[in-house]
Image (cartoon, rainbow, N blue to C red; front, side):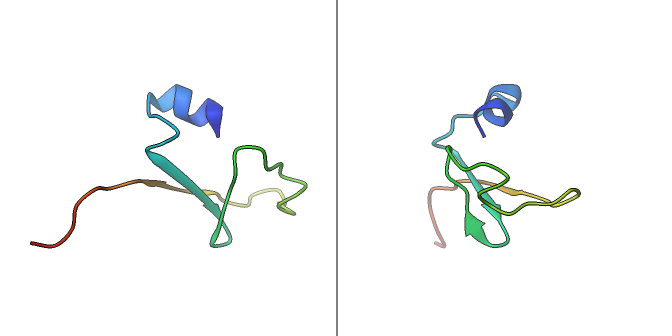
Amino acid sequence: VRTWCTRTGLSMRQIRFRFDGQPINEADTPAQLEMEDEDTIDVFQQQTGGVC
């Protein structure tokens, strides 16, 4: 999580990570998440605002 943010130049406050629809915490490990090879983590940039 931290490495990805550093590489992209985005703050951890701006980004949300999810695996199998569940939020990923900074301290989570692949083993804790029961990840397997080729699994994908979804990354979302937090947006502020709404519909006018």
